[in-house]
Image (cartoon, one colour):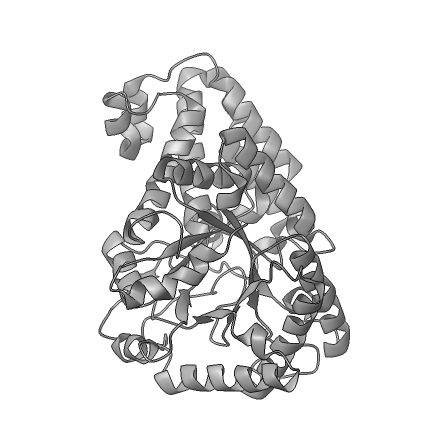
Length: 430
């Protein structure tokens, strides 16, 4: 898995070329398939990342270890004909977060094992995130503590990596929590100050040097900062280039670094282009893709009920509602309001916490039933127009077949194509 695409991002910006790379943060098989199909069509490399909560040595909420996740993604790549050497795997928020309820040393022993598992599985891009406090510690830690702990994790990664294929690193303390923000409000969202970015780089450089990891620090390609974008249940804070101008200017003196932008979901294509232009070259996207997946699946669910109303009790939406109410741990702390408000958020929130339920056996069976209900042939165009209007033009012009699997890929492809266009020319880095 070549990392030249990642290493080339800063060089291309220095040459005046707008060049970014979408980072698909999802373990859903349909999302992964859509990302690889879009990359295949665009003849471009694809970066797919797993978070510490999704995938770790204990299985995470997907039940996959890093080696298992690699086999999972490569299996889909082989099936769709996407070359493995154009696939880049990344680990996101790698640190103690899944175990932060434990004492720091216990949590970091677990984080050490996770980092080792990711590197040994061949993940090429490692986001070191030691920004959260563990049991008995403040929620926000001193910069030096965060950097020291990140360097500890980097030392494990270096010790476990193949000398011919070392990982590249992303650092940064101003990161949203794994899983997304609890709320979004423009009046409290602060763009990272240039002096804060400068300090983050300096303290991490010192911490790496303190462990004799100077050559590893040379492979730090990205810095996670807050460019002023975020989303909550029903609100999206759009990118404002003027607010990030000082931060973007600071980056010009710190080659070969680029910025990594989290929570870019639901931005306009113009906003995504602006982020890439201003140095936020790595664009993380996850909830928007599973949001789009839920939209198309619910649209197909409504179509199935129209075609076969006698079996409406088998609807996907009803199954998901029962499942989320029976097992509320993934949404209950996050979604407030009365019963109606909570129900709307469960299904339609931008935060998309329904995504944690798609791996559940009941949800997988319900999706399979839906595809079975629609397997009899082409869906009438008029029903596509009614329930999946954004896809109707492509169906009407025969660009997309009016069949359930094709409609799902097309819906996800619309989101992915925005990121690819915003990121500039495709192809390998260098």
